[in-house]
Image 1 (tube, rainbow over the protein chains, first blue to last red):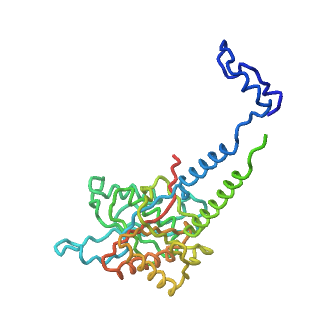
Image 2 (cartoon, rainbow over the protein chains, first blue to last red; image 1 turned 135 degrees about the vertical axis):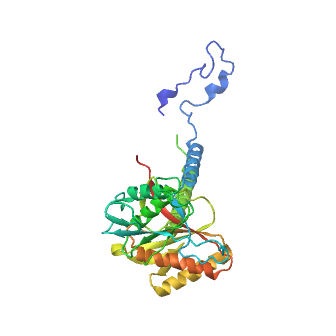
Image 3 (spheres, rainbow over the protein chains, first blue to last red; image 1 turned 180 degrees about the horizontal axis):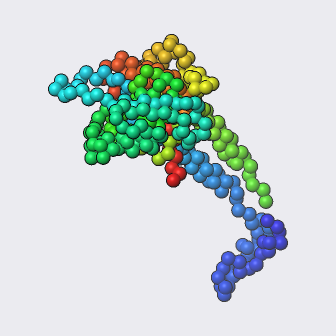
Length: 180
Length: 144
């Protein structure tokens, strides 16, 4: 702030036409001493910064799937009169490492049964939707167990993509199994 | 005109301390790995329930280099898995409905992930009444 910019004028800060009633106090202040105290402002600004940094989620954008534990030995929950459903086992294989992050190519999927084998995870989802009761093939209820069965060398991305296909299709009982 | 520097330096140092602490806190729980990315998955946000993070530290070509439970490291072999199992069981005794978030690299081989799932399952069976929820962590991609 330059000294020329704060030239004292008797009517500063007052509406036009108001007579300057306290000229003595204003005159006593040496010209150029008007400065706002930056320290408190910076204090508050930094405090705000800290607040927003703390309030921000650090792990941004991560989401989760609920997974039942594989082969849970739940003796308590089993009903002796209920037939054990043979789970639908979907086999997944990877032909190599996952190159870029959204690439789901390079995976092989096998669904047992007389169905056209899905070539990718989108087709797998479509097939699984058709297999649900109410779909075109209408075989399984929503709580029919689906086991994603990746072979040992399957990359985690492909295993999860198969899991996602089953969960997105509407199955409620999807687990990982397999010989991994 | 001169600003009083002392409080500003106070606050600046406070900020430095804050960020140093937070970055350490985040690092101990979060292993550097590339989570799987899926297009429009049927997932849900993690929520705020009590949780423990199980990470599989990625090694070369989909191998597991080590495991981590929170900030605690475990070797990626049979003895490490038994120790991991014991540590998870210990936490389940404290909170039987603990959520376990499993973080694995997108390139991790399934036969390196599955032993960890089995360890969690065995740990759950060791603690009577424990019903842990295993959650698989991934990054959703919403591009249309």
